[in-house]
Image 1: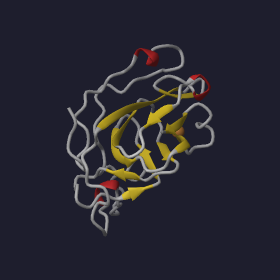
Image 2: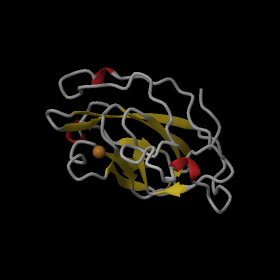
Image 3: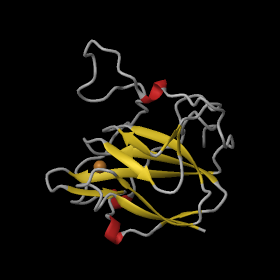
Length: 182
Ligand SMILES: [Cu+2]
């Protein structure tokens, strides 16, 4: 089941079989949206900290369609071995992610690790779902907090091959996918 545009995902969280093995040392048991959580080190510090929950677009949502499909991606790793992956599979072993030109899709990230991962999809906007479908903010990079989930919408409007990766240099070797849009 998919929620309407702007409100996020109702889809069940599933840890795929590829997430089980020495390359993954933990899996989030009940990941929630934490859009209004300032994050580690910025909570309850006496100041008002702006969060993703505060973001609204100045302009109406450019593509108001509800998503036609949803991709759930798990950010995975093994902290002690410093190995990083998506769905337990590192880039070198992964198949490209297929996008269909013209589609509106939802990406839901589940962070199964204890670190933040700023995820960057090249070539398209990441329309972050913060609760208002009419004013969806557009981002290039979306931070996924530890043990949480987050969703955004993508309009597939650029054919070709695109990089999709964590923006932390030491993570991106494994936490990386190629997107191919046809
Ligand atoms: Cu990362």
